[in-house]
Image 1 (tube, helix red, strand yellow):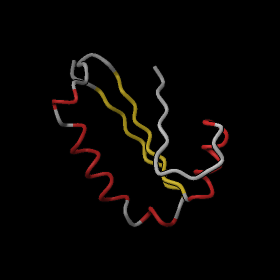
Image 2 (cartoon, helix red, strand yellow):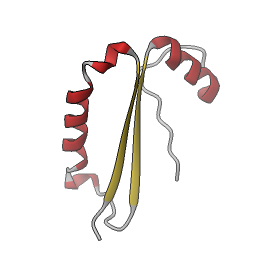
Image 3 (tube, one colour):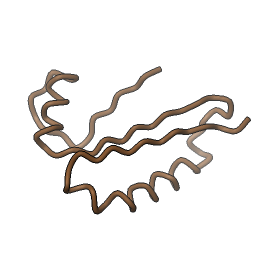
Image 4 (cartoon, one colour):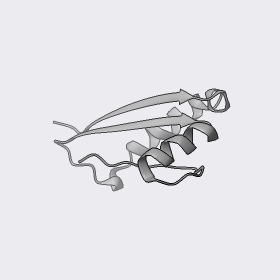
Length: 78
């Protein structure tokens, strides 16, 4: 069985919508890199959510208890 990686893209901002095609292409290229050491019999899910500053601030405040904008928020579910 080969590695299985499910990728979901969510765009909740007009700023990101015109960039989504390129982002999808880059993401597909990156997950094909063998050096990332994905285990072959595991299932992986990658959710990418693109939002504006207002929404990233809300998420950051709720999840990380920081009332400020940020470029990236990461959450690991293992």
